Image 1 (cartoon, rainbow, N blue to C red):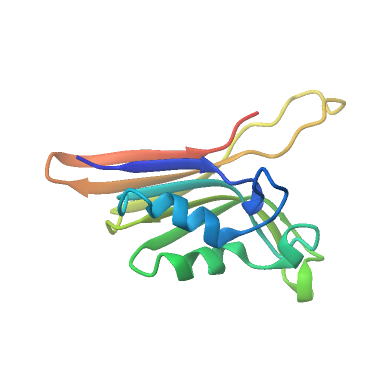
Image 2 (tube, rainbow, N blue to C red; image 1 turned 90 degrees about the horizontal axis):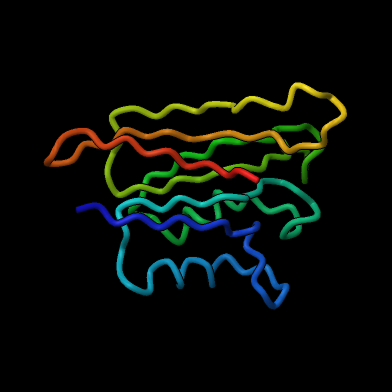
Length: 140
């Protein structure tokens, strides 16, 4: 049996308004080590979120025994310290995947409709019962 955690971390911001990735990590691990951790709204180099930190790198430090796969739904120039501003989904896994795919999802056809780009990160994980395919995405 695989254990999976899925959480829209809103770039680490808690209900108290403070951004604290260590608090997110503690909550995830409170009941043990899940096989897959699917996080949405993870940012890299956005000055307005967590002083422009690379949240993917920071989260990897809390989960050193996991492999990480980040899929950016937003990828723009002009990030903190000259890096790319990225925002998207992160999968952390204790099982080395057979395959990893990143898919951009369709946008509204009407250019007058405001929207955020959407993306899904797909992993195929080997299990004793066969391959397990999972997708991590964030929708409205």
